[in-house]
Length: 93
Image (cartoon, rainbow, N blue to C red; front, side, top):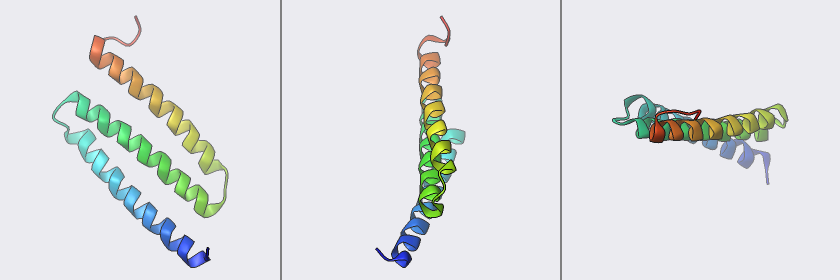
């Protein structure tokens, strides 16, 4: 694989993920219900994690992969906590 193809594919991926993050932010801010806002937050953390992975592939540094792992773990926990709060009205029983 040539370096030019890799560069342009990473650039296109970064642009598309940035657009997806903007759309998820719109869903999170202007969602008509709380469930839509939680879904927007879920999509936002997932897209940010993927954007960090693309940055890591482009730069070759491992710090981006570690940050993506932390975002993935914290995003999953926050989604579960918000879903539990919306279902029962409390997080800690």
